Length: 317
Length: 183
Image 1 (cartoon, each protein chain N blue to C red):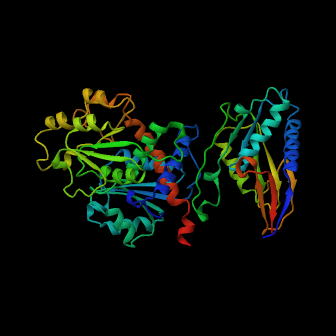
Image 2 (cartoon, each protein chain N blue to C red):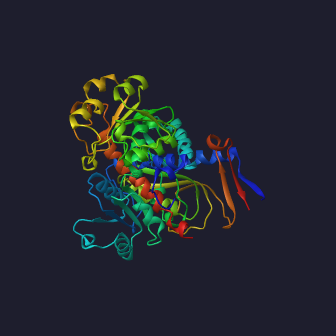
Image 3 (cartoon, one colour):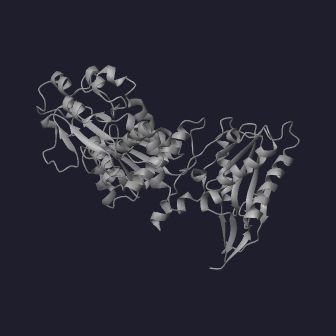
């Protein structure tokens, strides 16, 4: 594997393999000395053209725990604001000797462009490109689900038999897209729940569509309820009448939480809009995995960097 | 490819029994020779061997509790050849709950060859604590060391040429106990 651009590219064996490595990485993250010498001497650039806190810090921590050197680049306050192109920025950074580029960009396909244009030879990790994909988020979600449902016996398992409902702005969500592919690969059933305006028009996805959250919870009894963030920055057209109305129809609250299965879990990729897509009671309930997702994110990203960078010699052969 | 059996099931059993007793003897200056021993097997077959040595020790020393004294140490992330070998799957590391600090750690592996695996294991140990001492037990020492490392307890010294292959087979993994040499 040279790049991680989309969860579509991952076979079932590859995906389970990454989750298994992440399992061992999470053991490292819970011991006293949280550091491995594995990527000593390698340099990872975090190329962030869009704002991000948790993803950037998570990637930074993951690279540092594997002993790689990390350069953080954010478009604000750099020569990008002087008009430098993506190509020139990437080539400049690689000229300084980097082995991997973690890129977040507002344009869908930016990571792929970087990987396939031949501008640079680094490994590319997509950390979110526009409304397209966010593969490491899907991997950490799958890891969190597997951990909650299989516990200590997670290694080697997939997610078959589980029903995952993804609720909210499916149309603009790269998290939903990446999760759809990965969950399908791992054998889980995917349900999308959203107002019709926030569902994509072309419905050739391997997922079931629901317009009502209550109907979905009552009829389907999902094992996992994944609430997506309403991206207020993308709500420029009238997708729903008001925030209050959205919260009433599609937000997770106390009564909906009580209708869930005993074993069901509630996920959110963060940052949360408390009171909009999820209320405080649900976000802080024992069913919620929000903080586990954050800590698992570091382990999963360590596994991804290890998988991409540890066999560099072979790829160049 | 001609193969020759160098250790039969009986030989293998005798070798492990001898190693177990040597481990205890070497620790005899301690007030309780068996209680501060921690056996760490290096996956895959070192783990099985460590368990077998532990059961021999437990059969003679009452204060030795295998559950609290046997673990596994995956050294994949500490290898020095990660960059030029295909990505290796990482396996589980399990350190006994009592930890390794101030213990006598015995690393157990099936074949000692270049010594690089053991170097990686020593690095890995550093991250888990500071043992009183570290010793190495191997079933077969086939020579060709590339580092200044030697085994303290050896089942069989087997001079080989570099293009020969040593195959260690254990009941728990391969269904039979034997060591063969392929040339």
